[in-house]
Amino acid sequence: MSDSLNNIQVMRYNRQIVLPQIDLDGQERLLNARVLVMGVGGLGCHVAQSLVASGVGHITLVDDDTVSVTNLPRQVLFNDASVGQLKVDAAATQLRHLNPDCQVTCYARRPDTHQLDTLVQQHDIVLDCTDHKSAREQINQSCCTYTTTLVSGAAIRFEGQLFVSQFGPDMPCYHCLGLLFTDPQSSCTESGIFSPVVATIGLQQALIAMQILGQFGQPPLGKLILFDALSHQWQSFAVPKSAHCPVCGSI
Image 1 (cartoon, one colour):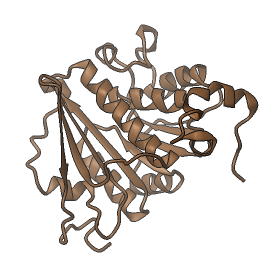
Image 2 (tube, helix red, strand yellow; image 1 turned 60 degrees about the vertical axis):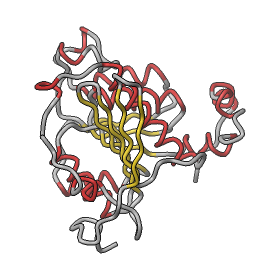
Image 3 (tube, one colour; image 1 turned 135 degrees about the horizontal axis):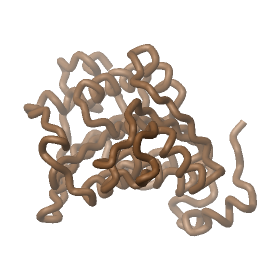
């Protein structure tokens, strides 16, 4: 049975509920949503903070890493006292203080294929906040297998990227996107990253996820969105589905 908002929650989320696109029904859809956040780095911290503050009822945080001092400029759920702690545990502590109504589950290891499949099946939407191509491909494969909506984000230097798929006959997947570009496999450690860019992309991921869960607006399904922080320009491109994609080509 779905949970309904109580009087205290109606007051808490009043500024969202008064928006006609959301209303009580949309806020209750967020309350009953289950969101899987893959990676609790810069993107994941901003994603989780926004989702929890906005009233999403359950999130699962997946990350096997610990907090280091170099994370602090952009991973906003951590502070100096968090250094050395597991990221999922440190983040969960802050998120539970932020909104005790939200159930936060921690998964402090890197899931294998079977474990990831189990996690994906238990959630309504997956937010890919990782920074490794192999992990992104694994997440994409599992989301495609179980037709679970995927919102992927990436940020490096002064550049950000978003991609969303709901997996269907005309819908491209992340692998289709990868077939169009040569991946240089660079990392933030090597190339650097400007903190506000991570915040911008993470909040966009959260916005898209809540649009899909709350069933309002027009999320950019099947599109690649690029952000250039130096020029403050956004670009959007429709991604073609590859008929020969080994992941989604048979859908």
